[in-house]
Length: 342
Image (cartoon, rainbow, N blue to C red; front, top):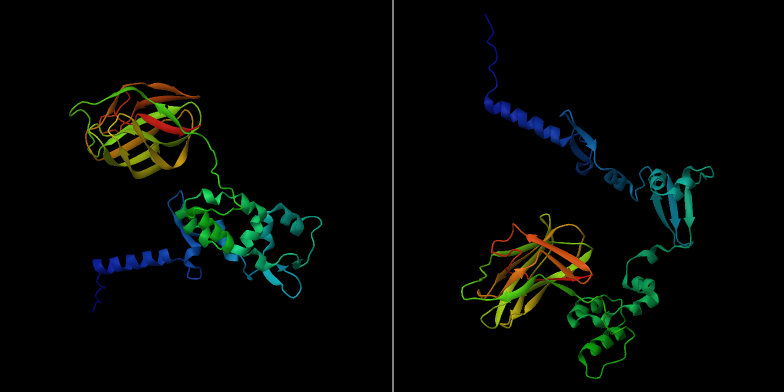
C-alpha cells in the first residue's frame, strides 16, 4: 500500500511563512535593544545587522556603571558625588585624558578626586546664570526690546531681581521714568541700502494686476551682502492694503520667507517688506527673490529695467526667473528694489 505524498502548502500558507521570516529578520538578535540595531545593505546586496552609530554606542555608556574603569569623586568632603566613566571613551575624545590614562606617566588609580567643584553649582538655574553673567548682565540692552518682548522673556526668567523688573516696567509705561542700570539706547547698526533696478515706473488702466501669482527675479552680487527685504510697488488707484509673501531661494532651496501685510498710499513710491532676519548672500551665485501679493489688483509697475546695477560698493546682476508667473522680468514688472546690508 503506497503512502500518499503530503499536499503542497497553499499560497496563503506560503505567504504567512514568508511574512514570519521577514518579521524575524527585521527583529534581529533578541538580546539587542531596538534602538541599538540598524539594517545595512552591503554592496553585494546582502543584508546584515550591525550596531548603529558610534555615537549611540558610546551614549549607552554615558554615566553608566557598566564596565566603568574610572570614577570621578566630585565635590568637597562630605558633599561628594561619584561620576562613573570609561577611560577609552575619555581618551579618544581628549588628548589630556589620553596622556593621563595611557601616557608614559599614567597612574593606575581607579578614582580621581576633584574637590573644588560643586555638582549643584553646575545646574542651569536663574541664580547660577546671573552669577555667571556677573557685571556683563548690565551690558544687555534690555530696554531696547518692546514691552511685549520684555514681558514674555526677561520679566519671567527670574534672572532679574524684582526691583529691576519693576523699574523696567515703569520705564516702559510711566511718565517719570526711573534710572536704569541697563543701556537704554538701541545699537546703531548698519543702515539698510537699496538697489533700484528700474529707471522708471508707470501705470495704465488694465495694465498690471496682482492675481495672487508669483513675481520673481534672479540676482547675483560681486561681494557678500545680507539680504533684508524687498521694495514693492503698491496700488495705483489710491490707498490699499496688501497681503504679501516674500521668499529668498538659492538653487531651489528656501533660505528665508515672510508672510505679512503693508499699506500703500496710492503713490508710485516703493514699500518695504522685510524678512524676519537678514540672510547672508554669497558673491557670484544667483539667488531668486519672489513676491506673491493679494489685494487691490491695479498696481504700478517698473520699466526700463537694467541687467547690471551699481549700488554703493556692490554690483548687482539680474536675470529672469522661471518662477515668475505674473510677467515680472529684467525689463519690467514688480520687485523694483532689493534691500540689503553691506
